[in-house]
View 1 (cartoon, rainbow, N blue to C red):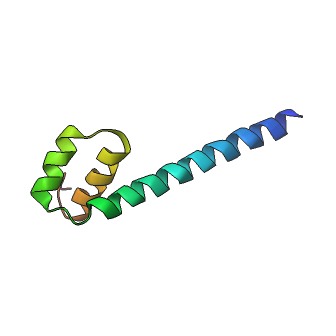
View 2 (cartoon, one colour; view 1 turned 90 degrees about the vertical axis):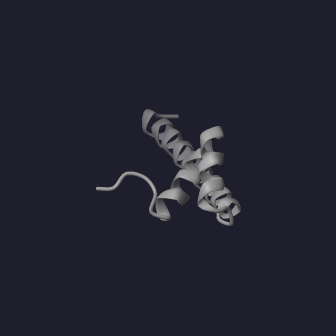
Length: 68
């Protein structure tokens, strides 16, 4: 196995990992979509990882967060 093949496999694995993470975050977003803003903010404070990412995305979509 050459260096190019090795690097390709590493890149492919990283891409698959990112796709899987994106799928998990989207699933969590679907689950939390029914929560109201106050419940989401409270959940955000006690969450971590992919759950926190999904909730932050929902809150941003609803107009919360930094204004430019």
